[in-house]
Length: 96
Image (tube, rainbow, N blue to C red; front, side):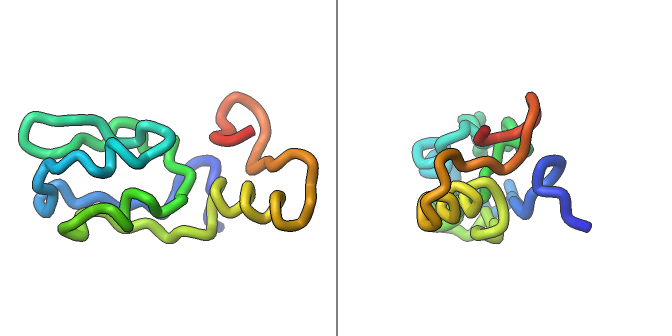
C-alpha cells in the first residue's frame, strides 16, 4: 500500500534537466536545490505532490501524480470546511 508519509509519486530525471531552476523557484518545500549542471533533488520526502514543479519544468524532467498527497489533503480540508488540514501526525508530517 502506498504510504504518502514515507514516499511520494515524485520522479525526477536529471538527464532531462536543463538547470533552468524553475522547480527551485516554485516548490514551496525546497524539494529541489540548485546544482552545478542540473538541479539536485534535495529533500524527496518534503514533496507535498502539488505538481507545481511538473507544470513549470520545460523539459519534462519532473513527474508527480498530483492529488494524492499533502496538497490534496489541504485542498480537501479547505473545500470541505475542516478547521485544520492534516496529512499525517508527528515530526514526519509534511503539512501538519
